[in-house]
Length: 119
Image 1 (tube, rainbow, N blue to C red):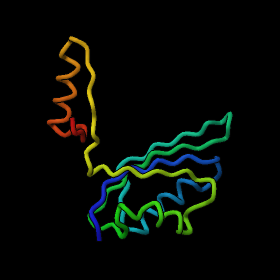
Image 2: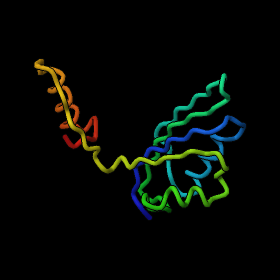
Image 3: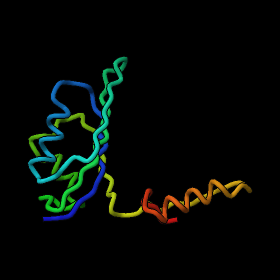
């Protein structure tokens, strides 16, 4: 079992049952949904979702998530899915003006772990 904290980004044609399939996939592997946001572009009939998943006992290692999901019964052709590992800090390069308040804000958010950044 593996400790995970990842964000799943999904976009696909809209249809009934998408949220159910994603949440069932997470549940079946021992995950807990920390945040879930979704919207539908009604003009293009397209579905978008962002789902943050955490678990101390997830059944799949992060490196194998995409393959596991695509080989599961929860996957449907047409799903464009991306996984982001929240346990690995994002590397950021900062460009700033002469005003220091914006730079200090970024540093502070990084230091207090509000943002998981490596600056």
